[in-house]
Length: 387
Ligand SMILES: Cc1ncc(COP(=O)(O)O)c(C=O)c1O
Image (tube, rainbow, N blue to C red):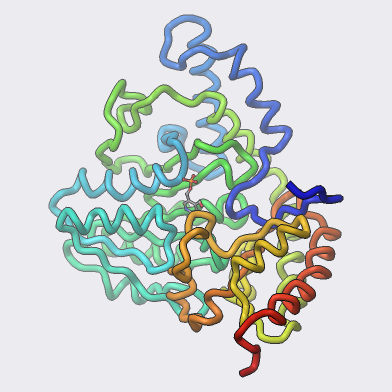
């Protein structure tokens, strides 16, 4: 490992550092209050109290009822439970609508439904990555069960018009799910038109391996995991008490800091866009304004995104080429393909994602290092910019 004066972490969309306050909240639940939340004795009752307290705290951040929050192992599970669980509970409706820019944790459950005889419509997006609510309306059929559209994209940051999409779904009697992993704690969410919503703790300075699914009261889902009947029968498995407590602490922290952190992140994003756009052969991927405050994505002509990430890493700066899950895959990202970034540019993409610990100095250092790294890589590239 190289020794560096300071590491600069600009990959907060992949995961975040657990906040000290969150660690402190979790600490007692590893080896003091370690009972099984289902046990009858005092250790168990204390754990149960902590789990239910966390459920109430999380529900409050969304303005929903605690009984509408179901704990999972993360957003991948929450998305699978929403999509496959709803499908299994409603076998008479066999059409699902989603978009081409969803996370694989939505796309792959949808693809699996297709192997089970379901029909899935994958909606196109515009050049910024936005879904047209009218395209959702046009795609709804008599047998449409569910529409799943993410609140904000994890690769390019574009915010989707989910309030309008949710309204249309409700007018047509179709269930609406949103993957709010990157949006929760960053932008307001229109819960009044959302039936199912997925969140993951590790994207908001909470621990890895825990998340939740909001399920509007009255919606029936078939469980994916069968066992001891935890989470009112919807998700068996001993509750991850420290993780759940940590997620609630992280959610509360995110909400309490939102007014201070979000404008700062928005400023960083605007500065990144303004400065990187000045470099020759660059293209902003995603919407310049209607986007999440913490995600910026650029393409650099004549450069491989992986080389850029590696060179920046040598300078102690952590970034990504797209979603962390698809980085090892050399196919250009499905999101960049959907917004029709030319293949040559799609290979040279860089995602910069900031977080609550990012400082203005770190952004300045990154912006000072980037032009030289880009110039060095272009100097050894067989593709000349502008040719
Ligand atoms: C938009 C989105 N959905 C789902 C996930 C998966 O979440 P988890 O890591 O909790 O399974 C991620 C994580 O990369 C994400 O960014």
